[in-house]
Every structure is written in C-alpha cells, then in structure tokens.
Image 1 (tube, one colour):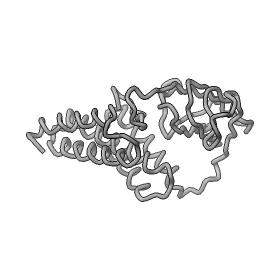
Image 2: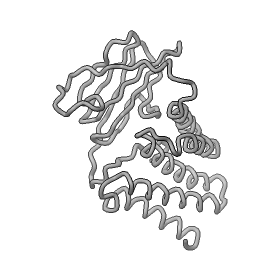
Image 3: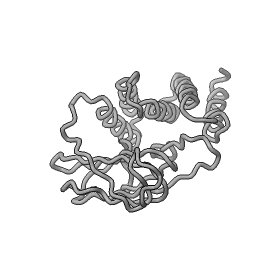
Image 4: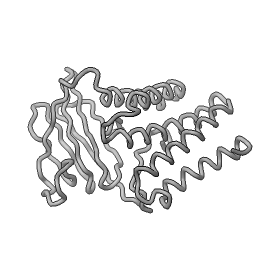
Length: 232
C-alpha cells in the first residue's frame, strides 16, 4: 500500500521493474476489478509481464472475466453480450508473445461458478478489506484480509502463493498504520511478523528476490519497526 491505496507489487525482483497502465471499459457500465481490487477510473498500474485477471460485474449480477499478460500500456473492453474483448498491448494468459497486439481476448462467463469457490470468495474478502482500509477502519480491514488468507492458505491454485504474499504485505501495512489509531505495541509486532513472512514468501517465488529493491524496502520497514519496538 502507498498513501491510501493497495499496492500492486512488482514481483519479478529486477531493479526499476517496469510498470504499465491498464485501463478497462465495460459496456454497459459495470463494476470492474483487476486481480480482485478496484481502482479510481478503472485504471491500474501493473508490473510488466504480470498476469491480470479482469472481471466485470453488471447490476443484474452477470459477470465476465478475462485473464491477460501485461506487455505494455493497454486498454480492455468487456462487453456484456459476450463478444470477445478488444485488447491493446497485452496477450491472453498462455498465448505466446507473437500474438498480434490487437488479438481478441475471449471473455469467460463466471456467473455459474460454484458458490463455495475459495478463490472467488477470497477476492471478495480482499475487496472488502480494501474498502475498509480506504475508510480507515483498520481492524475491519485486518479481519477481511485475514479471512481471505485463511480461506486460500494451502490452496493448490497456481495463483494462490502470489496472492497470499500480497495479503501478508497488506496485513503488515494495515497493522502498522492501525498503530496510529490504537497505539498498542502488539500491532507493530504483528506488522513486523507479517513483513518477515511476506519477505520469506517472495523469496520462494521471485528469482533474485534478495537483490531486489522490494526486498530492500521490506527490510528497511522491518528495521524501522525494530527501532520503534526497542529491538527484535
């Protein structure tokens, strides 16, 4: 998180890792999320070569989703009538880099997904945590993020490890920020634990994580918390 918004982490560990802008339009107007999070103007900053799952939900409950790999700044159009999305500057997940920039992206109806689908429910909990964080209801944000983590911890879904890492980071930031409202040292101690767990998680997922700017930033945050708490 930076400022008051959730941080979309650059998880590939190279200094100066490129980020691109993803703009999504839905017709007719719909609520749009990218990797479970919403953004002002439906515009997100996303790391180069990262996977992005984009979902549109219309007022009548119909949903459409598409999964992309981000190559450069791009625009996506999601149509309620089910026509293929039009994509500029990305490629569908699983398709080679040689796909033309304007290649269509199939949309996938997900309205019939099982009600008990853990990943879908976890995304909803993360969105609820984001909303709680935005209104400075930090304890509610913590509860929602923890529920999302518990729901998919141990999941075999290939996206789960990265999502779990992001949840750990968000928990760390919320615990640290919540100290400003409720100055209990335990909140800082929990923030420190979450940062360390996030760092360990990323080390298993990202090549050369130990030499990345993101790792250095997390270590700096941990040292700052150690100083505030009077040592490890």
